[in-house]
View 1 (cartoon, protein in one colour):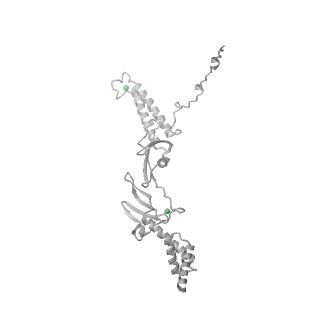
View 2 (cartoon, rainbow, N blue to C red):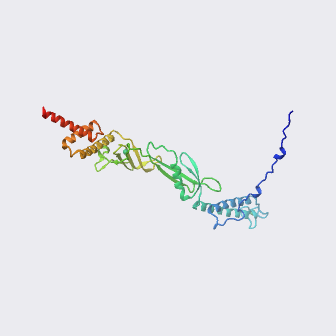
View 3 (cartoon, rainbow, N blue to C red):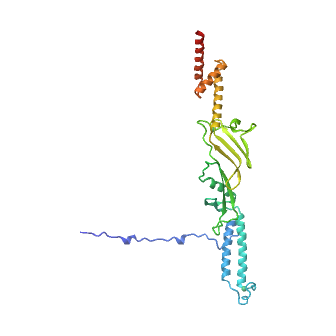
Length: 319
Ligand SMILES: [Zn+2]
Ligand SMILES: [Zn+2]
């Protein structure tokens, strides 16, 4: 036996309640905003709407019979003439309201763009938009391996009545994306120096050279041999000049200087530690040979060498 399952279609009927009647619409078309209370943006939007209304009214208006022959010089009571005068007044108000909106400090949307991309910035005051452009530029994924980048972008206010970007009120923003400072030698922070032997130039101003519109100055890190290069007027892609700092890898010259500097410092340390125990000339000679064998030679390594020498001397005396 097959028993049919009762289908309860009838209890599925639901009463859909529309809430359209409870929608609160807050249109204020009937109360034209006055310039004293409305924002410049609101006044502009209202003036644009009023101009549209005036244009439609003018399109619909026709001249009175008496006027029809002279459409450019309407009789005083001609409906078409009155509509035209109202349209001109509405357009003048619209133009003035647009200027006031552009000149105001009120937040607005902007179209921001550079050579490669564009985007919308929402609700930004003109005073703040330059900083927003810079943030937008900085947030990009930039390759600074060839040196710092100088970037420029522009923001155009978006007209609230048309949604179009306006050429008027354009704001320029620029930013330099610096190269990240490379890591120094293990456990060290860069110590920038200007050794003449590595950098050349004038003895009293080593590493500084004139270059085009400005100067280029170079420094070397005493720990890792990397170079830091400052340009007072680096040329960007668009022909402008900007300050820039970049970094170059250590080379043979700088590494040689770093090694010589380290050796000199180590000699001074070892001399200080051992000068009370040994005669200075012998001490310095022993330090030299110890460091030649191992650049990290310790106090004990030097001592061992000096004691060895003494043993040899004693043997010579004994024989
Ligand atoms: Zn007329
Ligand atoms: Zn360094």
